[in-house]
Image (spheres, one colour):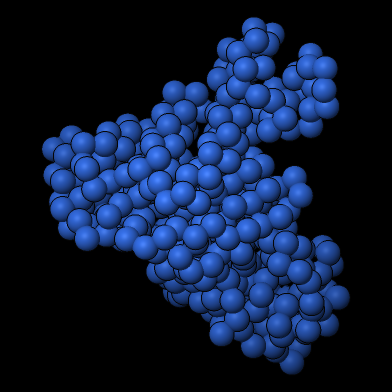
Length: 358
């Protein structure tokens, strides 16, 4: 079983969590080379053999599983010797920005590793899922979603450093929960919007490596002050994209310090700052997500809010007092309906154990 996640996103330093929704993946070996995969959510079945694994153009949901299978065997799935029969089913809302794809990849890689007797560390397994997303699903994602699913713990955030691939738990404390508010705006990262922003950040890192008198390999090596001083050498759009991850890295460090002090309102304020950065600099928000965050700011029992995951639709994540959940949901739904004519889906979630075998 694999859990989904919510996050404060940055390319290298991240605060995230596995949540109490997930995907079950049941699998058994076959006696020959045949494979059969059923998506319980759609009641569709894909059939293939270990020697014919390739990205699919129809029923593309299978690519998250077949890609993971492919890279579990280093791109040579025929080496598996025998096939498998599997079915997956979950309660993660699709298209909500809650990383249902990563949850599917992580439960797949754990289950298939078990039936084939393969032992790899969790970071390696996370990277296999990431590679599947790159090569089979066509989304150049970072490692955040997969690592969050792999390293999530109950009642805690995952603080990740993707330069060293070190992951630690940061307790959230009692009396606080997250509320996911799913908009009705379409969420998709495979249409090039995410890829273009990633490319802009990589271009900016190369630029700063050439103008700063220090080693720069990623934007985490650049301070906000350096961005202000040298941004003039970048195209305006590239400069805007770059400042978002620079600020996010700083917010992650500040956020961990605030949580250690039990300062939930201070942590929440950083979530609001993060959303404003997404809205104004990274431009991966949308009207629906902005409306949810703006409504949240007027509710005292909401400590912070930001878009979830890669943005471009999907959901917002709110840090809330769970005792006021009904009030919060009612107020946000009322304002959202008045503006867009329909209602969002609000649900309280708690940081939970990540992907594991059952």
